[in-house]
Structures are given as structure tokens and as C-alpha cells.
Length: 260
Length: 335
Image (cartoon, rainbow over all chains, first blue to last red; front, side, top):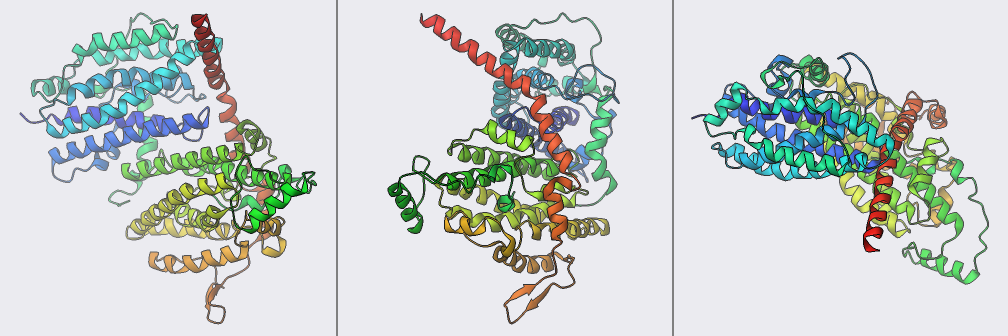
């Protein structure tokens, strides 16, 4: 059975969107070492996205390329988790402006990398050998992202009164978006059936354990979920994605057909 | 990337003329080592003025790396391909790394990173003036690699032989990475010049805006360079501003020809007798005006650095508070 392209795009879009967000800190980090760390995380994610788009383009054939997939698809065609497209601050509408909050950045990187270490680990056994190879490389990188974000989560939670309050606010804001991890999209279902992907639902106990352990060490509490389950991975996004893509794709789209 | 500003006086250099009160045998040993082209290490005695000159120069260099992240960072989110985005992020990350080595090298002279940052944020310490110009189109990223990093390399390669060991060693690594950046910048421009009419126009526009600014990066003419003579004597500066500038022009003209861009100087022509290119007048009034804080982006650059630092205070506080708590817990456990 062939690899469902939509599933590769889901993984690639996750990586490119979060890579784009992490790079926004470049030159604005709270300390030089963190500027560099987030640039490094971003670089890893952009690298993962490139490999995944390249694999998708290869399977699509024709004139598909990594850049056509990243730059010439609209927001409704993107398959990333909604969590990853949110700006680095609390809940505000798409055209609101606010300062970046490092706690939001760190909590998001933590929640996502805590999932992806398990996803990449499982995908090393994917029936698609290219995806298995990408997973092996990405697992090493994601383990570092998890280590980095978990360390900071604990420092913030168990740091000062202000850092604790900011970390707790970020957890409260972002945790509901993780519910999207546990629903099954048609692309995921097809990929699991083809033995290309693993069932993310089965990873939930491991993710819960990782998250609960870190939150406890950080003296933070996990909010109860009740509300809307986001659907970014089927193309129904927040107001924020079109701004992110507008900025990312603008120059490339102004010069269609140009080579850079 | 970086440059020149090391010849630019700032507040931190005001006490340079302070007279050393060290015993003469120490001074003699220092002078002898300088004369023998040896290296001075952190634990060695050195004249106070030598120490201050180095702190000023290395911290200006470090500040330049950090402020220099901003004009290029301006294009990361909009890079027109994923490959170029990755290259640019890696490059800007390298600049941050250069800042780190350089702050560390300066710390070996007894000045903390916090003190140096305070100098930058208060406006007392300078950074390279080239970063006070805006990056207005994507080709600026390539042109900064080709010309700005190219000029920086001309300045920095001699610093690998600087008399102060930690600085010289930091510069070896910095220069390797800068050479890589320069080639990447040039390659990006070559691709654009083979592209569409609009892409070629972007490259020419960027060259027009940056060429003269890059020539000014080498600092004032030798006759007007305030610290050059002493810097030469101490082995901190090896080649004069004008000589480096000429070397850069001579190397760059043929590269511009291969690229297919016009360097915006009608007086630029080969002088057979001198064996060098002649070039037109640099606008030093504009240069000094920008150094003094009145360039197009000075206020934005500095305010952005200050804001990042202030906004990050709670993060640094959290790390320190957590470290303190961990230490207390360890002590409690041991007791």
C-alpha cells in the first residue's frame, strides 16, 4: 500500500510552522544562549520539514517540489496541529498585537516534543523506508528539543512567582490544543492502515506520564479539559495561520517560477 | 560578520591614556614579548591601557555580532525557499555564537558580560555602524554575506595573529565561519543574477546601497584614525585601515564583474602605476553621523536589543531562582 501523502504533509506542516514560530525569537531571546538554542530548534524543524516535503513531492511526481508544497499551498491546505501556529502569547484574536512570551514558546515546544519523541520513535518502523530514516534523524533532534524545553519548564514553574504564574498561564492556554493529538484524521487513519504510521492514540499514556511528571516537578497544575477540540490537521485552522503563511510565502509568491 | 568599529572611540575608551604604575620589569617583559611577536595570555601582566583597548575592541566586536543578527533576522520569516531559510537561520545563529566567544574572550580581561551589555544598552559602547542601515530586499541578505562579511574577513584575518591569545584564537574560528558565509552570500547572488529581471534588479539595488557603507567599514583614513598607531605597536592591529580597504576593493571588483553587477562608483578604475584600483570619495560626514547615532536604524537596533534584554529579565531571574533552590535542596540533603 502506498504512503498517504496527506500524512507526510501533516508531519511536514507541523515542522515548518513550528520552525517558523521558533525562528521569530532570533535576535530577541531572553539571553544569547537561548537565542541560539531556539535558532537551533528552528533549524532542526525546517530541516525535518524539507525532508518530509521532498518525500511527499517524490511520491506526488510531476512538478511538485518542497518549496511548492511549503510556499504555494493556502492555509486550508495546511495539515499542522493548530497548537503549532499560535503566536507566542496568550489567547488573542488573529490581528491583535502583543509581546512575545517565552513561557508560551517553551510550554508549546515541550508539549509538542513530548509527543514527537514517541511518534518519531514509532515511525522508525514505518513501512515507508524514507519516512523511517527521517524519523531516526528527527528522533535525535526532538529528544534535544524535549530536554531543552522541559528544563526551562521546570525552571520557570519552580523559579520566581512571576515565572510560575507565566508558565501556569501558558499551560492553561495551550493544554486544550493538545486534545487534537488524540483524534484520528482520515490521513492518519489511512497511514496507520498502510503501516506507514503508528496510532497516535496509543501514545497517550506515555505522553501523559511525561507531561504529568514534568508539570509536577515544575510545581504546575494540569488544567481539566472541557471545550472545543481543534482540527488544524484536517485544514480547519485558527485565525493565526493565514498571517504566519502570508509572511512566510509572500516573497516566494511575488516571484512565481523564480529560483533562489 | 563584523568589521571595523574597533577604531571608533567610545566612552569606554576615554581613560586610555591612564599611566601604568606597574613595576618596570613587568612592563619590560610585556614589551619584550610584544616585540618578539609572542602571545599575551589572561594571567600575564599587561599595561592597563592595553587591557582597556582590548576590552573596548573585543566588546565592540561582540556587540556588532549581536546587533548584526537583527538586519539579517529581518528576512528569516520571509526567506523565499526553505533551503535559503535554513542557511540564513544557521548564519544568524553563527553570529550569535561569535558574540558568545567574543564576550568570553573579553571576560578573560576582567570585564563581565553584564558590564559589557550595560555599555551597549546605555549607548556608551559602539558597534559596527554597518548594521545601522536597513535590509530592504531579499538580496540584501546575499550582499551582506558577500560584501559586509567579505570586508569583515579582510579586517579579521589579521586579528588571528593578534597579540592577545584568547582573542586571536576566537578569531580563527570566527574567520572560518565568516568565509563560509561570504561564499554562501555570493552563491545566493549568483543564482539571483541568473534568474528574472526583478531578481537582478534586487541584487543591483542592494549593491548600490551597501557598497559605500562597506568601504567605510574599514574605518577612517589612516591620517584620522585615533587608535591605530598604538594598536599597531601592541600587535592588536596589524594592517592599516586604508591598506585593508584597498585590498578589499582590489579583491571585490573582479567578483562584481563575474556576478554582473555594477559597483556604484564612476571613479573606480584600475591604476596601472599603483597596481591597485582607484576609487572615489567616501562620504565621511555621513559615516560619522551614523556612528554618532543618527543613521537610519540606530534607534531601532539599540531599542530592540534593550527591549529583548528587559523582556527577558524574568526568564533570567527564574533560572537563577531555580538554581538557588536546587543548591539549597542539595545542601539540605547533604546535612
